[in-house]
Image (cartoon, rainbow, N blue to C red; front, side, top):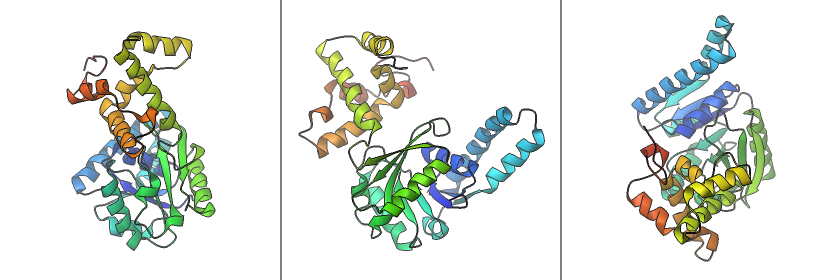
Length: 291
C-alpha cells in the first residue's frame, strides 16, 4: 500500500494528523473539506508540525530536512469536492463529526462514485460501524480504523471488522495500519471497540463514586496512579478527553443499550457539562486549569 491514496476531512484534528502520518510513510493523501480556507489552515498546521519533526530528526542535516519536507508535502493534495477526491483513492478514512446520519449520508455518496476496489473506513470512536455502513452497497469493503490522539505519538490502531467485512479487506487494513507504523489490534464491531469499551465505564464508575460520596476526585486519581500504576487517574483523564465528548459517547450507548448498567448516564457528569465545563480545554471540569 506504499503508493495508495487516502482521502479524509482536513479541519478535523484527527483527520489532519492521520493524513500527515500517512504522507510521512510514503502514502499519497487527499485532504477533503467543505471550504478551501479550512484546507489552507490545515496545510499551514501540517507544515508547522513537520518543521518541528524535522528540527529533531534532521538536526545536523539541513539539506535532508528540506528534502523530507518537500517530499511529504508533495504527497498531500487537497480538495473541496469529495466526489472528485475519491475517484482515485484506495482507502477512504472518514473523520468528521460524530453524527450517525451525517456519516451515513457521506458514505452513501462516496459509495456511488468511488472505484469498486476502494475500501471505506470510519475513524468513529463510539458509533457502530455496521450502522454507519447501513446504506453502502460494498459491505465487504467497509471497516473501522480507530486512531488515537495525538496520532503521530500514539502507536495503537484499532482495526474493526463487521460481520460483512471480507477477510481480504480486513487483512488489507491491518497491512495498511502496519505501514503507517502503528501497532494494530483487531476487534469486532462492539460498542467502543476495545479501549473505549473498557475505559469509558471505568471513568464513569469513578464519577459515580464521587456522586455517592465514596471518595473525592483527588483521592480516586491518587489511588489509581499509585495503586494501579496508571499515568493518569480516571477523573484527570475525563478532564483531558473532554467531559462533553465522554457524555456524548455515554448518552449514545445508553440510548442504544438501555439494559447495560455500565452504560448508565451520570447526573453529575451531565450537570458539569451543562455548566459549560468540558475539562482542560475550557479551563474547568472536575478540576480547574490555568490557561
